[in-house]
Image 1: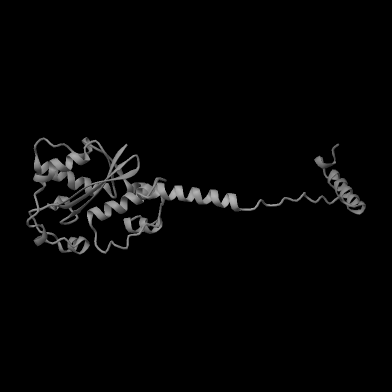
Image 2: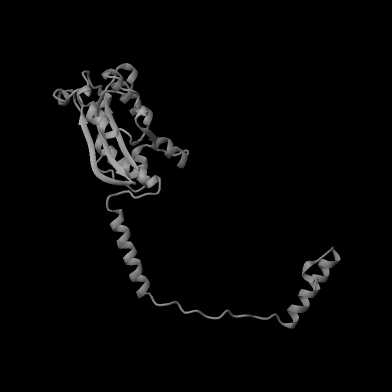
Length: 235
């Protein structure tokens, strides 16, 4: 199974207001393991980055001036994601922007969902953790994933964090080194098992009721019989 964890950065929040994609970051998973293959590209949006968006990702207009247009990179991007299952946090946002870019390119490109199945990890997180904060940062904290390098958002960094969050949420491996760690843990467990002394077992001590206790027990049963049927008195 081939999956692609995807994240984008944009000039603003509203695609309807003409905002564009300025960065795409993708990581490949095959059979729930990171393969090391990735796609990363900055894009010249041909429009200004809003101050609010700049504060989030730190990507300036000046930096983007010499970057390629989406129409130039679209073939490489589509070749990387085509046929994969896309894993996106708050998928409606990224999918909306990608569809807008594909529409602007033309060339008979269809909606991204015509090429890929999409999993929204925000929807998944809300099902698993109803009533809690489910931002990427909150999920990293919940699952013990180190996001200390995330002073600013970046598409490739966020895709890497999301890959770990997704694997943790769905019960799978979170890093490239999990197989090795599992093997080490298994070896350590076997060593402990061999070195640990067997616990000594002792027979259970049985204390019989004395004559006085038996008489009191019988009197109690008789009182219960006076009020109706008593199962304990039946032979």
